[in-house]
Image (cartoon, rainbow, N blue to C red; front, side, top):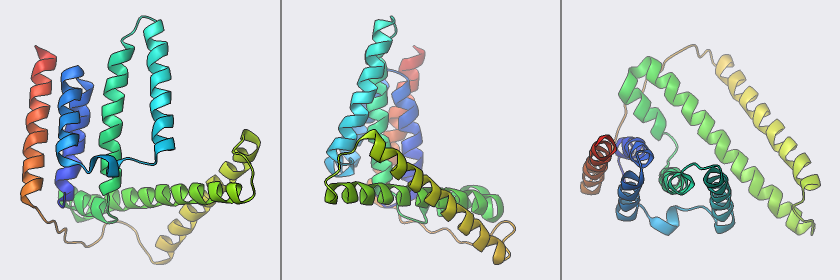
Length: 211
């Protein structure tokens, strides 16, 4: 999918659709099957299995308390699939383009820049975690709590330091607000089909949720 706007709005519509119930979740899952890279859009197996296990545990606790645990599991599982798809397709600079397209060169530029810096920090944290895990394997140390806590603390400190440095660079360059950017997007036939399907599935989910 080339058009970041289509992906952005499709993710929002499908996430809302999944929250409406089983039907909305099924339609959102169908969209994921049709328009995502499927297995390629998912994270590594251990991470994905860990999140599914956590959702399963929460669903079981809800079920034991008389709540609708199975529906919660289905909703969250589908929303996670959509979120992983969006993350795998993200290209740096897309949010800046989308926000400027939506809100203009002043407020849109600021919102887009905040989003871009935040996502870049998340990617750096993910990279730091993978390097830390590799270092533990090289040292033949198991990933125990006593080893993870100092690593997590160091990664957090590095993330805060990077944010401080980024803010300092912007201040030194005299940035106050807004910016100049002409958003550009490429729309393919697949993008149009994806948007139509997501809008249609969203409308059907809302109607089924009401009636």
